[in-house]
Structures are given as structure tokens and as C-alpha cells.
Amino acid sequence: GMEAFELELDQATAVRDVKKLAKDMCGIEPEHMRLIYNGAVLKESDTLEAYDEASGMAVQILFTAGHTGLLGGSKGTVVQRNPFSTPVRGMPGSKGNRCSRMSGRLGGNALIRKYGILMKRQEFREKAEQIGFVKYQ
Image (tube, rainbow, N blue to C red; front, top):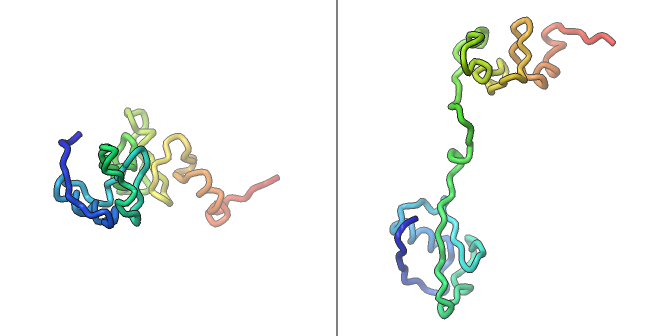
């Protein structure tokens, strides 16, 4: 990671204040920091009184990704331009690009496509009667 740095702090300093001071040194936003001392994560409201200077152990700062970094997935978000048209069949990646007409979420193989419905299974079950489908026993 990064180079080690030192901060002169009082024992009564809260961890949230330590994060604000460390932001200037390492460039990481305080909400993306986790401070770890002796294998335990320090809580925001804790003070540095738990830190034992004689042990010689350092407080580690770990970077955690924000909510956008945790989304994951290999494909970017798809903007649904025309909800009544489907991606061209047979083209590579066309299955994963199909999105639900109701929620706009990618459906892949779990999309009901017959009659141009383009809804996920649960969405179809909720709206089937309104569309005009009747379930016979």
C-alpha cells in the first residue's frame, strides 16, 4: 500500500477525528476508512485510550470501496431506450442485454419473452390479470 506516516494525537481523541486528520495524509475519505489495531476494527465513537503505545503495534488504515465500488458485475448498466424492442437475437451478448419492461433490470434467461411480454417471472405473476391472462386449473 502506501508509505507509513505518523500523527501526534491525544489519548482522548475519537476515532472519527483520527480519520479526519488521516485524510490529509493519505487522501482517503473518512467514510472509506477502517482503522484496525491489534486485529480489531476501531469503532467511530471509541477513543484512542485502547491504544497501547508501549506495544509498538501500529494502527492500520484500510481502504474500503464505497457503494459504487461494491456493485460488481461485468456489464455496465443498460439504458432501455425502447421497451417494445428486444436486442437482436443471435448476436453475442444479446441474452444478457435483455431487460424487464417494468423494472428495467437485466433479465438474461429469466425473462418471459413470449408475445413480447418482456417481464421477469414475479412481475408477470403480479400483472398477469391486468394484462388479460387467466389461469385455468
